[in-house]
Structures are given as structure tokens and as C-alpha cells.
Image 1: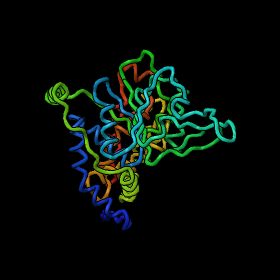
Image 2 (image 1 turned 180 degrees about the vertical axis):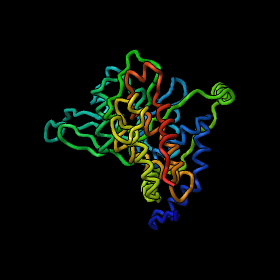
Image 3 (image 1 turned 90 degrees about the vertical axis):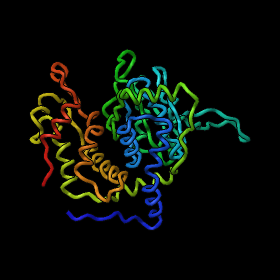
Image 4 (image 1 turned 135 degrees about the vertical axis):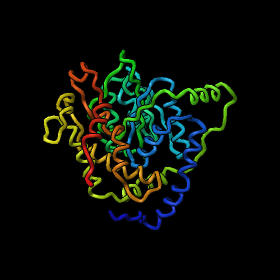
Length: 336
């Protein structure tokens, strides 16, 4: 396969050079606040480079909120945090109209809600009812909010990083499949190894260290997103991504036996798109000039794990989406 270098427009060439030069500095600044979790941090950054939203799943106390806030700092993004609760209303997110006094009389004025920011932390998103969760759908997909028939564009860039707690079922509401599909990645954060947890305990019970500093801007991030789309990908690599996703759909000729046995629903077209775009962004993050099969395989878990719906048999036999994805990666072979 012939490799081709990324050839950005002249006005974006400097952004590419600065990004490649600052990749390690981005990691260094984030490490001032976050210990470990390197794979999770990399996946979230790849999602931002690709222009996608991410769902972050993890137990309490794993620094999910701190991580999102730190990412906003290193990219100089306007950070907004929304704490999702059972009594949260859609207008509490998108904004509402209020009656104001003007020189010509009273009129309704739209007051933007906290969704009007660059990086939105939807904290514990599964603690609010589906009606309020759906208030984010238009914002995530269209980058706009509609109130009283008027459309209000959201600031650019715009990203939603939502967190959810997987262990507490009391008082939580599963996210609708339509909303889950809007998230490019489902990033899982797990407990730290002993040495890293010791480092966190030592750091957080002593004198506070320096906060992460700004490395790049939101405008740089938007330009990097456009560069990621120009990363070359061979047709056989893209075809591998499509075949991998098609194998998750029960009842289709491409589906594996395990898929027919344990899944009631598989991944859709958006999964194929996110796999390809994510692979290009991962190649750019690692300073490579083309996306590979290994990029697709590395991102299969965060792209697919929230798009596969297991059935009762899977629950009864302890079959998880993680195991099914692993079996898919073993069974679906890339073209040689």
C-alpha cells in the first residue's frame, strides 16, 4: 500500500506543526492533575480531535470531573458543568425566555442555559429522566438549540463529555439508544494500580501543585479536526471497519453465531463512520501519516460497547459486550 503524507492548506500547516510539537506537552500538563488512566485520556483526546462527544463510565472518585475540567484548561475552552438530577428540566440545560422591560415595552428575551459553552460536562447524565436527557440531542447533533421556534447556534468548538456511574441502579435512568448513538466513544475508567493510587493519595493530601496550563486554543482544535479528516486511509482498512460493524447485527448474513445468540441489536452506520474518523484522529495523535487496521482495532471497544444491546440469554449466561467485541476482533479478519 502506498503511503501519502498529509498535505494541509498553507494556513493550517502551522497548526499541524504546532500540534505535533505540543502533543507531549498536552500530556505533561494533564498529568499535573491526572495520575494514570492513560488509555482513557488518550481516547477522550482522540474524540476531541475527531470532533466527537464522549461518554465516560466509571465508579465515583476516579477523577472524571477533574479530567474534563483539565482538558478544557489545556485547550483554553469555555467550560460549563451541568449536574444532572431527577428534577432537572430541559430549560435548565438549553435556556429559557424571560419577560424583560425595554424602552419600547415588555418583551421576551432568551437567556442561554449552561449548554452554551465549548466543553460541556454532563455530570451523572443517567440521573435525570429521558425527557431532560433528550434536551441534549439537538445540541449534540446539530450544534444548536431551538427555543420558541428560534434557533440559536452554539459556540464552536462544541463538545459534550458526559459521565455516568455504572454501579448504582437506584434513581438512575438508562440513556435512550438514540442519545447513546450520538456519543462517539464510551470511555471506561477503572480503578488505578496500587502505585498510581498511592501517588494520587500523596498528591491530594499534601500541598496543592500547579494547575494544568493552556497549550492550544479552541481555534487550533477546530483546525486539527479538519486535518484529521484529511488523514489518508486505504480502502481495505475502511472496508475492515465496515465489516467489523456489520458483524454485530443479528440476523444478517455477516453476523457471528455469538451475535445471533446474545445480541438483540447491533451497531449502525454511525459506528462505521466513528471507527474510520477515530482511526484517522488516532493516527494524527500519534504523528503518523495514515490510518491502519490497528487503529480500528484499538478503538473498537469505545466505539462499539455502548451500541450493542444484549438480550436475556446474555444476561443469564454472563456474556458481556466486552467479550463479544473481543470475539468479533478475533473472528473478523482484515484483508491482506
